[in-house]
Image (cartoon, rainbow, N blue to C red; front, top):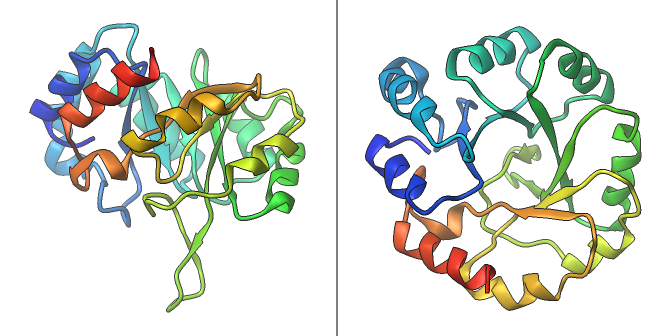
Length: 214
């Protein structure tokens, strides 16, 4: 999220997490130079039960640690090609800050990648839809608005809890409730709840929270 007023609107709905993207190529990039005042003044004033998540893509550990300290982040989401060693080393340097490693899913074989991170590399996974730029033939990191086949989740037999992400909308509540995997920890909603990149539709978010908690 980028807009101070919008952050406050969403905070009133009491989500468990609010995310800030620190990836310059994303249309949701926080742009720390321009909006640092908003984040510094508003994000830390969120109620303690709302955790602040910083999303990073192939960033250096030094930059991540600097931003974690500057904004008091509670979780770091690594959405790039970060290795298990990188995740483990970063985790050792951060106290009381949890790591979410995103795994982009296209088919069952992608679920197998989680095994590399089993050995105390991260606290959560986030399963998102794998998307590739047809023009550049390189990965697109997040925000595609597309779903992967949720039946793939049945093949996940690890021990690390996971967030479900990728094209989730208000119309998916019943399908989400049908998922019986005992390690489904949370739901990550993004592009289908936006007015524009980085600006959430508070009414849609409110309705989703009401329906998912019934």
